[in-house]
Image (cartoon, rainbow, N blue to C red; front, side, top):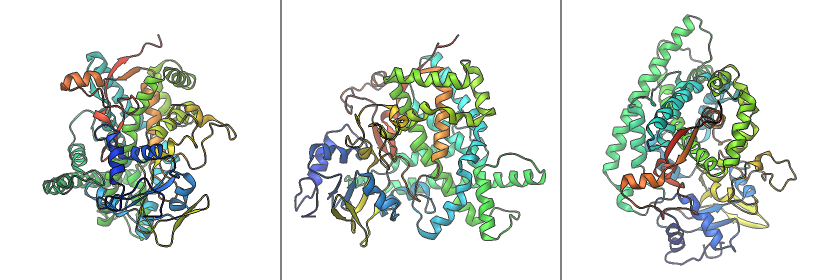
Length: 508
């Protein structure tokens, strides 16, 4: 480490003191993906690729905040996921999840599930997503009438669970209207997951958590096993009746699996497929919990801070769907591709994901791979490679006025200073290991925006939540903002984004 670019380093403590200073600059449980960006801001001599030695907490890291450097480990060479990722997510997702599988096994299962996530197929499932989102709006109408503080992240997560149940299994999980044992076990598992690179050894190695993991895993797997068997029975009934309708993702995956393996459907679901399907469903749930529900909160938050952008979004929705919002759900269902005629809505969505990226990939260094950047050579062997989306998305060299919310970046033409640099926007990563569900996330979030933003004013209620809890958290901010990301297995809005909602009166 001596001759490698890094923050101030001690031969005894490595970079732990610097990391401690970075953590101390943020409120409790702030997501650590903000720390490398803070380190570069306070050590401007560092290049956009630098090393951080945090041994014995974890392997030393190579921080990557440059898109060309990131491409070398995700596209030009798609390096393996780091073992930390596997240790972190296996208790939640199982060992056959698409996040951590490698090699031919990953390639096979990714290929099996790819057809269901194709954009054209997702569009054929929009009607169910709209129905679930309409239920979401009805629930928030009740909150508006009661003037009640609620956690938007919780209601958005329940919406996401219902949508995933519909598009993957063609089943209503009714997570928005009832307590669901799958959701309860899943969210309990999230709460017990340790922070990556946690230096609190009791929290990291607490023996109780393994009993909790096993109990929750048993509940989730049993629940999903039952749903998959039900779906398999319905599938056979539909085939016998020659019913013509859009297939849920799991049906397309089973078709592909049977085709690849040369098997016939038979009278029961193949056990190998079932086990993988259980782990993939938990993965899709995790990704939806991660990306869609959290991003919905930050969409609402940023538009509450930028009313001009909110009005422009609403105006675009009026132009496409008309000003009578009671007819919008039907209009989307009848013409799902109308969602592609919302350029400013998509720009807002992308800008929210730039400022609040839900996750980053972490790769394993390779003795045969070094990163080349600006004439310098950065060895990767023995290092945990972290292309940090948060830091890359806020680099002023890449993004003019990087800390500002400017959706117009994603409408700019090439040559415009606002035009996003190639590879610098990466909330879903690039390369063969990119997010399989990104098209689903886009469509879910567009539907959410179209069906809520014109009818509701949703504003943060952190001060009200402080009063309810009897706590003063007014100092818990990042750049003066109460709504920041914390690490609860994934990047979530702090306190679940406490909010209050009122009905809007834009239209007669």
